[in-house]
Amino acid sequence: MADEKKDKDEKQPSVAGDVGALLTGLKTTLSESFRPVVTTMYPEDKTPRSERYRGRHYLRRYDNGLERCIGCELCAAACPVGCILVIAAENTDENRVSPGERYAKTYEINMLRCIFCGYCEEACPVQAIVLGPEYELSDTSREKFIYTKEKLLEPLPPDVQARLDSKAAPSPPPSPLRGEGA
Amino acid sequence: MNDFYNNAIGHWVVVVVAMTVLLFVVLTATAYTVWFERVALGRIQRRPGPNRVGPAGLMQLAADGVKLAFKESFIPEKTDRIIYVLAPAIGVAAAFLAWAVIPIGLWDYYGPKIQYWIADVNVGILVIFAASSLNVYAIVLGGYSSNNKYSLLGGLRSAAQLISYEMALGLALVPTFMIVGSLRLRDIVEYTVTWGPYHGPIPLILLTPIGFIIYLISATAETNRTPFDLPEAEQELIGGFLTEYSGLKFTMYYLAEYLNVITVSTLAVLLFFGGWYLGPIPPVIAFLFKVVIMIFVYIWLRGTFPRLRYDMLMRLGWKVLLPLAMANVVVTAVVLVAVS
Image (tube, rainbow over all chains, first blue to last red; front, side, top):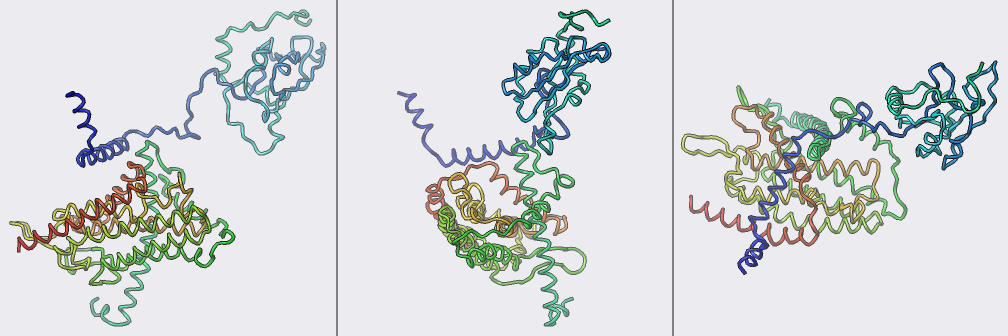
């Protein structure tokens, strides 16, 4: 009974209580305004990204300079939006591009279609394609969003290299098809 | 100087120069009030506010102004064209008109006192009220002529709000006039008391604290600022009377709003905080300091309180502020008679 009465008293509106509430609000906003700003100044500062962040793609090479891609088109098959185009060609002894039997003569990714799901990276048997950390991919024409093989073969950023190394990928992989060239 | 001022032509030269200076100073002050508000609101929300254009974002308003000026001056179809174009101009004109009678003390030491004013009217405060109540025409006519139901609703709300709060605003200042015995703004600032060893000007808020609180609330309502910005309540009325305005005409409304903020802050300083008197500090600096503090109070209120519901707004105006202001007048009168 006493508790009930107390509850009722607390709910009674009073001028002093209302003004006190307003002053509490003013105090809160004033003290907040002296606390440090939490905004990240974007173009200058960037928020850290997860090391598994999926941004633009890179094609990798072996340490000896050969391309990893063997033109198997598993990435293109795995891609849910069909943004990868691979046209394979045979390696010959005169023109050896990758250690495997074939290599990717054309490798194009349509970045306008890509949804950055990373399935291509998972599908790749030789870990030739990886997704890097870059996300600022805007450009001025649609054509520039078709990333060609030259662009994709740019050197990997060091943090991606570190991530791949930590996975202890077999490098170079045992060739299932034939011996190491000559 | 006095001879020059008393000469008919010299008088006009002085007035025209004063008006030109005023135009530039007040327009610049308006721009930086907007900057100040954006930064202060940002800090309250722990954002930095504008900081890209120029040092500390100080050129932001120049960029905004250029952008607004170059926008297409679009007039929607089936508007009442003449009124539609005229309404924002009324707003700016009314906002500037109040500055005709606002005095500013510039220098107070050796030699003559230097003060600035365009017109030293003996009913100065009434002139300001007359000019600022013209603001309601800008909003109502803008809302009416836009041929848009949201604009119209915003305009109607504004009419009701401004009329309601004007009463409380006027009555809140009556005790000040009764104490000082003059409506001239300079006389109010120069009002001196002799309290024991102290002889000099005092901030009148010491004598009329209730009047100041009523003034603060109803001036916020008069300038249509949060938490009383119902005419442009964007969640329910899109942009209220501003909905159909863009480009330079929008700029004029915007300008008028911030001009009014400066005006009511200045008026609060003149009427309640002793104007340009603040101990040994040079008058013009003391005056600016006080005005900036008052503007900050308005921004602070905006950054803190949510908008009132419409019926609460009316209840506050008619059932709380108006009776309080009347009681304040009566009590002050009784005290004045008792003291004398």
